[in-house]
Length: 422
Ligand code: IMP
Image 1 (cartoon, rainbow, N blue to C red):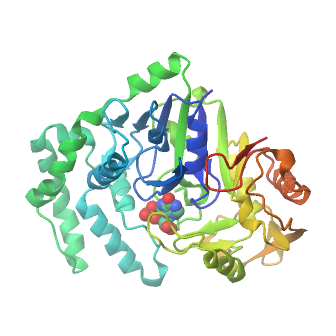
Image 2: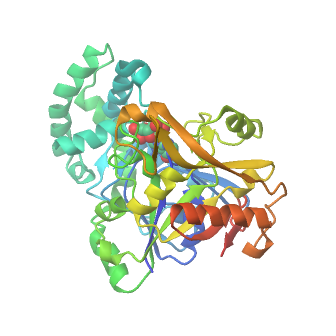
Image 3: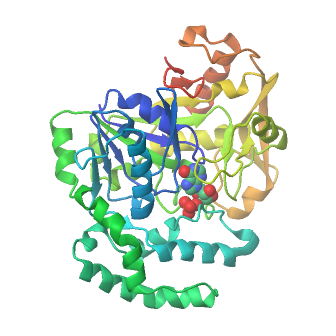
């Protein structure tokens, strides 16, 4: 049973916890897109881990983890992540963590180019994580990027960096930012590349052999559907396909190998960075921030919060081919007297059931809400569907009706055991 896990909102849906939970039955856990812009928080054995590039499966001693070709890999960031896991006693051996030698490398100038682009956009900035993700994917599409395989021969890597810097330095100088030299770029990366070298490999034969043997593959998505470069709230998106198709192109596993797609969705909505968020609401944002909740795992920024938007989730269920929903942080709504659900968008007097493509429409959306009673009791100790309060079950059933996908998992707290399977 091979499963893709993807986010149905703007990331931060709690995918790390669901991946960690499903890893128990998996043999191989694979990341196929994104970079260290992601921050997956997992609480295992009472300890909190924040993972950025390494699949959450690493927290299970016997699982193999793969960083696929579709990921953009920051060698320095990855080494820091490895060091922090090793400090917790988790050994990151080449047998446990395989990195595709086709993955593109985030270089120091990509981070500067990311900052330069954001600066030049002024109040129209995307609000990126400034990890150089967009410029690295842009170089990939422009066919001027460096892949890990290029670092097997330092002379090839240096030659490619020199060519790329001719243009990158002109852009940086235009923005009055420091320029780069090949030798210093290479020197900055060298120790990290050398540390990671034993992990670089052609991962395709490994992944396919595992699949052919009937082992269980789990694909860990990063970010969420509305940050997808094609299906998201463009241009306020990241630069990869965060939807389920990205798992195949980002790992070299064909679509017919996939048996199920689990969509992770918070019981409400959050977003970090700029861009549309029709149900954003100051009252709900304050409610969560006052409780120390909803601060970004990568940047620490307070997340923008709002009611659940089923116009978005319904669309996400379609484009990802969701077979099962995982609704997370249901307990976040435990204290609310009433709960609103966005069931449609009113745009210029017309009701829309799907998110618009026109960027100008996002500013004039009036969400159409249905209000339902809250359950107003603690769900964090519930361990089965039947133990959930009736009104919480009614809320989840309404989500199923509005989105067209069945709820299979419900998160009622951060710990592994606080996950209900229906
Ligand atoms: P970038 O991926 O750093 O280029 O940022 C583009 C947009 O995606 C910004 O709005 C970021 O806040 C958002 N973003 C990127 N990664 C994540 C994530 O893991 N969770 C939530 N938002 C993200």
